[in-house]
Image (cartoon, rainbow, N blue to C red; front, side, top):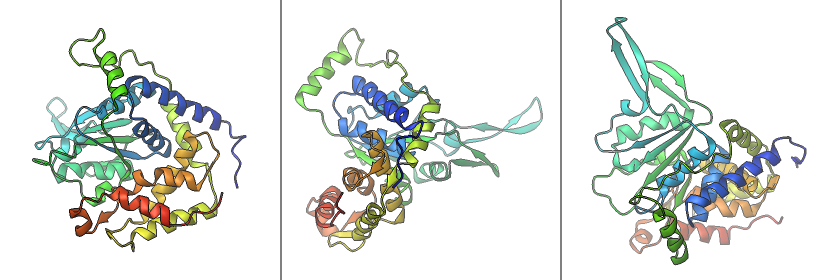
Amino acid sequence: MTNMTNTPDFTRSHEVMLALKKNFSSVVIGQHQAIDELLMCVAAGGHILIEGVPGLAKTLLARALAQSTQAEHVRIQFTPDLMPSDIVGHAMFEQQTNRFTIRQGPVFSNIVIADEINRAPAKTQSALLEAMQEQQVSLEGETRRLPNPFIVVATQNPIEQEGTYPLPQAQLDRFLCKTLMDYPNADDEKEMLNLVTHEQVANQFSLTSLEPVASIDDVTALQTATSFVAVDDAVQRYIVELVQSTRQWNGIDIGAGPRASIALLRAARGQAMLEGQTYATPDHVKQVAPAILRHRIQLTPDLDIEGYKADDMINTLLNDVSAPRQ
């Protein structure tokens, strides 16, 4: 097993994650699970889909990430009339030079906040597909690389389905994890009242006081260090067994594909980095499994009608599939 204690950037990378977590927690009250999963995704170099009802600070959390890392970022409000060219860019005729030039779209940023991504039609949603998978965009027959790091933080509202376009499975699969944000408890909501209203006009929460605690170079170094977190062969076999079980489990109609195994491995490394460990364990796999698998499986119609959720089946899998001893 590889030992990373002498790796120069490992300690610094873990410190960066802790600093980011502290920064996020100062503006997003409660939501500890969502914060941890966002940090895990950042460390693993993956994209994240955040689902929750309006007003739970989904977009605020994404903006806090951009502000804390001094990243070049953009927020795109997805709407039914949004066109693919509004995201990736388009060719434009310049009268002065009498030639066409390429105008790059907002996707050419380190962090892309795709707000209410399910509000745009499938053609526009798919404009992000190549960017998310290949970290490149094809414009007028020319391939252009996106900046590094490149992270998509998308949000969606699960309760209003009128005028929405559900994300196709091919695109859902490109998100490393799907995070669920729930209502805060009473103490957190009371703390939020004071934070948002004290010396603030209306309900516009400003992030200008949020000091950057890392740089883009720190994020790149964090992702590199995370990729070197050791994963024992037994843990890798456990990951494969978990994913393969979803394909034959009673109650799961469509199981997770091979990309889920890769995502579980990357996420386990990210979770280990968050906890300051140099190797991933079965417990790390169990911690990240719901966020990694919930958008990659589909329940049978009868369980869906009865109100079962993907997380119910994932928890059953985690209880029944034997994990290797640590």
